[in-house]
Length: 125
Image (cartoon, rainbow, N blue to C red):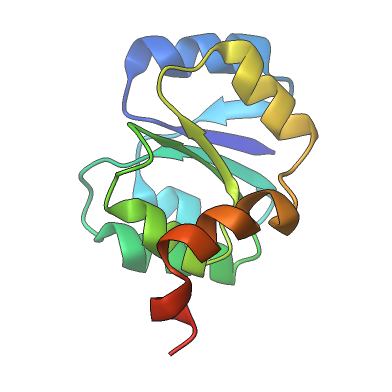
């Protein structure tokens, strides 16, 4: 099951229409209670958990996350990478971009240079 949790009603509907076996969800607790989810398509949005704690709980359940971020300078990017979220799409993106990401996860080798360039010193301390 692919859960869609972007907080953007129009985007949610388009993704749901174009991605098989998907469901739009609105509550973080539902996501954390879900036992059959394999992918969470999410953006940074206000909820009762902070971003880092919520994504930690999701990743702890071995749910793959496709994260939609505004740009590569988003403050959540570092936490996402540390939590093993490598499937990150920056705005602007298309529905096709998200569909491609659903079907093929990003290998570490693709994000390794980005991590080394931006966070390597901090991560390796």
